[in-house]
Structures are given as C-alpha cells and as structure tokens.
Image (cartoon, rainbow, N blue to C red; front, top):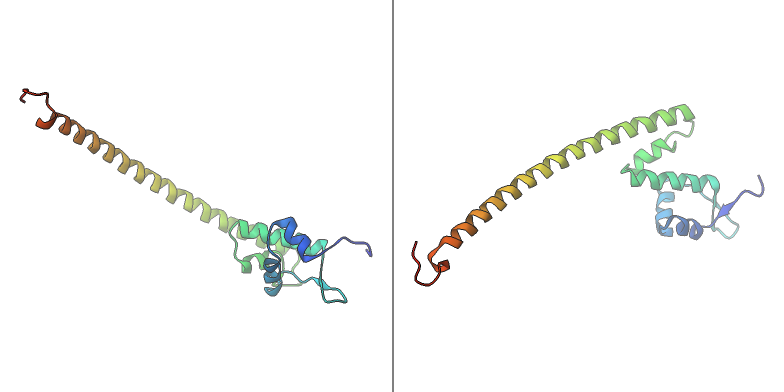
Length: 144
C-alpha cells in the first residue's frame, strides 16, 4: 500500500484535541511506534491513528496505560486476536464491576444526604415556630 494515508503529529493532535506532547508520551510508553521521515519527523499510519483512538478511549473509560497496552496487544507482540479480545473483555468486566460498586456507594451517599437534609429542614421549621412565638415577636401589649 504505497499510498496509505499518513499523519503528522500535529494532524493527530488536532483531530483528537490533545497535545503533541501527549502523543509523544504514548510513544515513550511504547504504546505507539511511528515511522520516521528522512528528516526524522514522526510519520503516523492509519494503524497508529487507530491505536491512538483506542488509547484515548481506554483512558476515558478509566483504564491504566498498562491495561491499555495489554488490551491492544503491546505487551505481547505475538498475541492472537482471540487472546486480545478475551483480555479486553476481562478488563471490561472488571471495570463494569468497579463502576457498579461506585454507583451503589453514590446511592448510599445520596440517601445519607437526603436524610440529613430532612432533619435540618424539620429542625429549621421547629426553630422558626419557636421564634415566632417568642415574646419579642408578639404584638404590642400582648402576652403569652
């Protein structure tokens, strides 16, 4: 494929709204391996672009770079597609379990906050009633 689409670092950075430094960081972590031009500029292929997209999606989902590397096959160059999919599914199940646990924790926190709010509203209502009945709030000449 001599006419395969090539990308510069600035093109990819602009497309994915990230800095070139971020792309270089992923390269340093061996998640990307662009080719080099004769002038030593990075040249990214469609495969590099797809890998970057997977890396960014993995980060958005909360995966570590090590987990992402394993899912996209960087830790084992000879990994079959079946193994890669199985690993990705395992990481996905783990992440879903974490998310479900956080959701339960947030539901409990929400209920605790609602309970505190109800107690505070009741107490505020009681205090306002007491304040309204206190002598300084009675009409002139009136007594309790």
